[in-house]
Image (tube, rainbow, N blue to C red; front, side, top):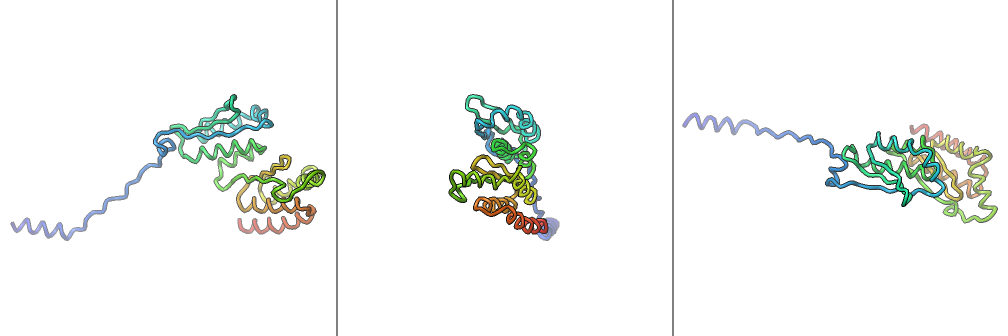
Length: 216
C-alpha cells in the first residue's frame, strides 16, 4: 500500500510529456484538389499561330519537364491546354505555366516570358492608348511613333532603365516586370502618349531609375 502511494506521488510530481508537433509533407497538386485534375486554357490569336508552331518545343520543354505540367495544342478550338499531373509538385505551377504561355501570345520573346516561371514577383500589365487619351487618325499614329522612337530607341531606353519588357501591338501596350518597375514604365509611356517629348521623359527616367537602384 505504501509503495502504491509513493508511485502516485512520483507520477503527480513528474511533468506530463507534451506531444511533439507532427511534421507533414507538403500536399501535391492532385491531393489538394481531392485527386481532381485542374485545367487552364490559353487562346491563340490568329497572328501568333505561326510563331507558336516554330517555338512549340521551346514552350513545351520548360512547362513539361521543369514545371511538370501537361501541355498540348488543341487544333479544333485553337487553344493551348494545360493540366496538372500526379507528380506536379506545386499547384501554383499550373498558373505560372498559363501566364508564361499567355505572355508569349501577347508578343513577348520566350527568354523574357520564361522569367514568369522562375520569379514570383513578375506579372504582365496591359492597357490601351485610348485608356490614357482618345486619339484618332494621324494623332494616334504619331503617339505610337513617340512610344517606339526612331528604330525603337525610346522603347529600349525605357526597358533598360526600368528593367521591364514592353510590347506595342497597334494600340495595345503590354508590360512585363515587377510591380514598382511596371508602374514607372507605365507612367513614362503615358507621358509620351500625352505628348511629352522623349528628352523630357528620359530625364525623369534617369532620376527614377537612380532611386530604384538605391532601393535594390
